[in-house]
Amino acid sequence: MLKIKEYVKAESLEQAYELNQKRGNRILGGMLWLKMSNARIHTAIDLSGLGLGRIDETEEEIRIGCMATLRELELNEPLERISQGLVRESVKHIVGVQFRNLATVGGSLFGRFGFSDVLTGFLALDTYVELYKGGILPLRKFVEMKRDNDILVRVIVRKTYGNYVYLTHRNTKTDFPVLTVAVSSDSRGARAVVGARTQKAVCIALPQEWKCRLDQGNCSGKELQELSKELAGEIPMGSNLRASAGYRRHLAGVLIRRGLLALQERGRQDAD
Amino acid sequence: MQINVVLNGKTITEEIAPDLLLIDFVRNHKCYSVKRGCETSNCGLCTVFLDQKPVLSCGILAARADGHAVDTLEGLLEEAKEFAMFIADQGAEQCGFCNPGMIMNAIALFRENKEPSDEEIREYLAGNLCRCSGYEGQLRGIRAFLEYKKQGGALCVQ
Image (cartoon, rainbow over all chains, first blue to last red; front, side):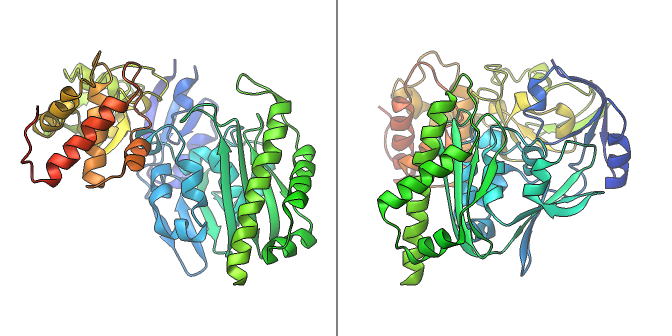
């Protein structure tokens, strides 16, 4: 059972950062995962009074405060538009509305959880994180970093227009995913992101030749099937109670193929 | 630590332990409609409104509710009663344990979306688990209630 000795509603990021350097102190996100643990926390640090729950749109990017909830992401019109529904699709299966009204984007990404729909979705977009001390860095770099005592202040999604598709497979609705897949094609190239493979999501770039063909919509079904199988084979998978590594690998091939087919269809529509 | 919470319209100032969950806070104030179910933030039984938004009271500290409004079914009796009759009319309550949470979240849905489709109803209520009914009764009850509201509340409940 989670135990907390003291609770501080931070008055500034500097105060929160200072407190967070002490062992035994923890920053609270939505705290839905933390609550499941037996952690003994000396001081719980609450960022909810710092105005970090906002989602702001500028000409070049969408700036999401770390305390914005998954439900707010789901309902945000600029995010819906820029991600072509990917953000909404990636969070809508997460438990229920009441859960998503609590879970925060900062908590979801800072944890770099192996089961995360949110991480998979944002990795497919042109996403950066702003750390209080570490500055702004691409999400894909942040994912590879070890957890430290910095604070994830904001998530920044650049308006890199392209095509994005999100797919997931669950054994039962609202459960953790067995596998998550996001595919994208934009000015940075084409890529497939695969998560919930029992480890955190990974991103694989597709060769430029494939991006061109997908954007023009001239790949055959057989070609896409072979490419998907090949990509799925490159990704390390693990086993747990939900599925075996072999099943996940097969599933990854299927979901990547479906994603690429949808991507190709959108490429065709854009060309028309 | 001290918190100030407006619970069902009444301001409460109280000393609490920092790790007190909101579910325990509201139950300590005799809001027994808020049920402890899974305790893993999955079942929706403990749904309350925090500043008018449905949240799981087993997944949030009472300290987070400081300075905010919390509403439980006890504070929404009139609104809930009208809808609950339609659920009862379909025999959808069965054991009734999930009912308060389901009704709270359904009210949140109706406030957000006056004319939800079946798909939207299913999606919104996906976080409310019921182990008796298979959800069809609730869905029929919700459809009947929405039709009743659409007709200006003119239909009789059988």
